Length: 327
Image (cartoon, rainbow, N blue to C red; front, side, top):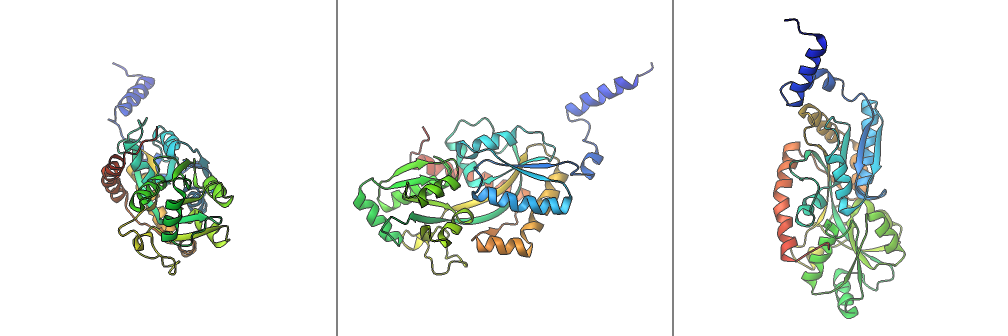
């Protein structure tokens, strides 16, 4: 029986659909051969956005393909994350976001995606502690003074949940308030940039926010820095105390990571991971990250996957213990 060429093509397509035929090696060997998109699920100007644009420029220089950063804010990063989860797993769409927010989401939302099943972790890009900052109108210059002031105001102090209710910064504020015995209101934002604008304008009083996006406003004198949320003092801010010096054991921060849709070929995952590690080790990038208070993180894709698996139940416990709800 003679098999027609178009029959062979249809058969091959069906076999490929069921995973029986591998994606042609040529499709991966010449990767990338068109523009790459990095989705940032927060507004422009925040930590994830700053890092995405830094990395995007370097990838364009190295690979010769444009990298487009697309901001898709909403729902603590879940709207933009969903866009990436449902994108083609071809290595041309990525998410760069606060992974801390992503691993909190399963405990708070009925998500349209599964964090562990619908993403292919690529690399943890950087870690930066949160900065505890207040409006210049708040008469507090230390963590202890802020606690005393908030207690005296009896619920009148407003905390900016910079990445929305249920975000890592919101949980930092909740745990801080409980540990301090204070009560303050929460004002949700879609991203850190607008929260910073309102903090500068004294429309909100206090927040925890990523160091990359926040420290420039501290340097300009527009807001006051009280403490850092890392376990030890930051090398760039040796005179700034940690929150833990007042509240022992307090630790939070921003863990920025790069993710692809599940099913993205391992060869592409490995190539992008190696490139991100190369970029974050470049002297100019390391210097810029250090100036902003962030540290590069050279995790493998497998290490990031394990980190996420560990953090999801840990965050779920905090949400449950503190009875946190986004409703």
